[in-house]
Picture 1: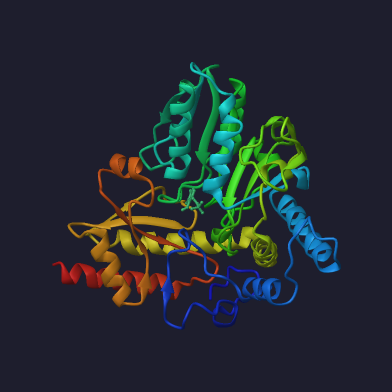
Picture 2: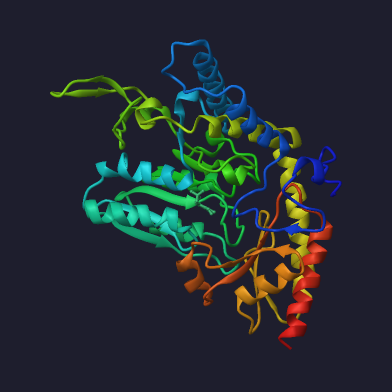
Length: 402
Ligand SMILES: Cc1ncc(COP(=O)(O)O)c(C=O)c1O
């Protein structure tokens, strides 16, 4: 394994689902799970299971304590001012939909929001649905030639009509890292809020929402080495306090009568129904795992793998690389004249797992002028050997397709 990690990582014992000799290069889609997360989930169902916030019995009280301890851990992990600012959702997709439905329904015709060309569909479609409901307008910021959101143009585009800027902190296709602090300053200068889609950032770079000065931050647990079905919406306390509920049901109320219902304060107001109890427990274990390695070390490790991959692939005539040199953990490319699905299939025969497709970013594909790309994305468990296997596989692709 790479020496850039601060502690030695035994891939076989830490990641039981990665067999020897398999290069898993699809962490941007979902991360493999460390044993500590699997153990936490097994214990959560096999030993300590009960519902939360409702039971009067000891087991439920203990599970509630563990559940709320996870919320505090998430708050600390991303630099939130209070655990009450942490809303558990199913994932980034649900977090963005929550903001679009609750906060967004306060927008009206004439208001504008600004997205970018490289957004994931989950940071496009919820805003289009909001546009259909309210008549707001959507503007799309262009990219620099190397595939970063062009903040000089963002600055020129923003007007007082803009109420929200919603951008990926790290692109899931290009790996480009947004200068989030500058973006927050630009948004706030016209009175707009900033939402960051942190799905690809949280597993790769240390995130501190206070230092970034954003207003909303969303991410998914499964990309952070945690379980699927659990994610986080963070919003500034005063914004969350003023937001109406979006889902109604148990746990989110203060008092219910048929004449009138009043709602619980955040975060409960936004967590209707029985939550993903064990998912929340697993997320806590995932954050502990990531912190035990350290995000600065993870970032250095992935940056070194990206550099090695880009250096090797740029030496192959037939390969076109997308995105900036200094991308975070993600490299998209095409092999000239070969459909990315064929690239993916041949790499699979070589025991290299990459993603091939539009990556839920069709407007970006259109901008790049391709129907799809091949994407290799790295995680803590990858090594230079995985990069070498990728390169060998692509050399075989070029031999097969001449
Ligand atoms: C940048 C980005 N945003 C949002 C999402 C959606 O995440 P989820 O499907 O976990 O809700 C993804 C997942 O690929 C992503 O990469």
